[in-house]
Length: 328
Image (cartoon, rainbow, N blue to C red):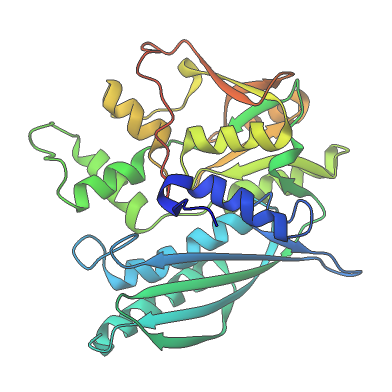
């Protein structure tokens, strides 16, 4: 028996070891896909644990409910979900949890489901020392499959929007930074808090990808979301697709009000929970998609080589290190 502990192993290595007990490629993406003759089913489960992912000081129970649904739906979207079916809810509550907290949580669930589709299918409830919310989301797979291992050398890498906002929102909500001392723009504060508390999954971008796919002969494209951070998402695509990603720092989309400096680049590259899509497409498809959706931006490309992420034109390469979030 080894004396290794989970904290030292880390999240990615833990997942790699667990996958030995699963069918080949079953844990390659966040979603599992169950194939059938008629419609294939996408299934995703995400946990939110009190004092790890949330607490009452930084986010309201209604926002927690919204976020629990939309984070799951983001994983379905990044696998190519054509239609949301709904969610199953596992709920752990402390015995002294107030009913109002639970009611507000379910109002958040309902608001997200009313916005994006699907319903509450069922669930279970138990007690524990900390609150925990486990959501299993289900949806139907589209004809076009989006997978982390489908990127090809020569393809263009795109993103649906700006990263780093949710990290900044977390820091603001938890009083880890002083917005007045840093002279952060009021609009940026608003955008960041919304990104942290009420993330919007990129379903509209997916719809345009699916609609445009009719013009291009591909059944599978490379894609993931940036829930674990911009850099980590690209590295995951590179690793699963067995090719190298090259990113142009100058092409990374940033709002004009986003400050400059190493710490701000760290928030952007490694912050996580932004739920933007990273998409790999052939050049002609990428050009077409950028014409019909001006929020989608070209940021790099894939080449033959060992799985890795190279960032060109980065002003301080000595500072660049993978500080992506890990649960352990």
